[in-house]
Image 1 (cartoon, rainbow, N blue to C red):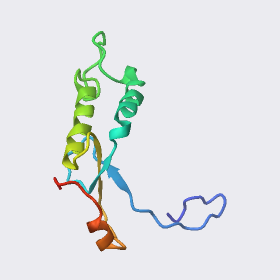
Image 2 (cartoon, rainbow, N blue to C red; image 1 turned 135 degrees about the horizontal axis):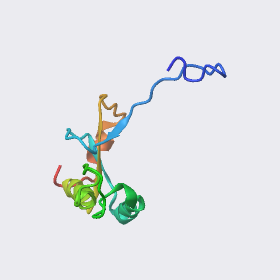
Image 3 (tube, rainbow, N blue to C red; image 1 turned 180 degrees about the vertical axis):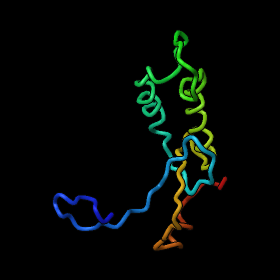
Image 4 (cartoon, rainbow, N blue to C red; image 1 turned 90 degrees about the vertical axis):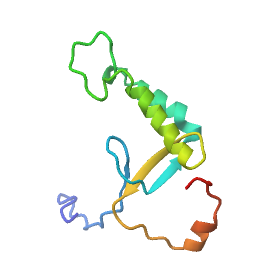
Amino acid sequence: MKNYDPETGGEKIAVPMVAHNVFSWRSSISFVVDISDFLEEKMAAIRAHRSQFYDPNSNEPETRLTAKHFLTELETRSRYYGSLIGVDAGEPYFVREVLNIDDPFALLTRPMNLYS
């Protein structure tokens, strides 16, 4: 990011690895984070933006977000990904880069679910 902040003459910084949330496209996942303790809070935060979602009185064209079952789909998706790691809810991510693991023994011997 050579010209990240040309006004201050900031130094070039290395682009960090990015973990992409798997949202609206189907993709292989790299890992799933257990969000069981936060699913209700996540859904409440999303529902707080109710003007963006299904409104039976709207005359606007339907989109994926405004479809009647979109919010149910989001929660069901979280529960599905959670089931892949043996918990109530999960958030899937993928990384394009190859993950660099410092200690594969520590990673592979820690408790994991029986389903992966």
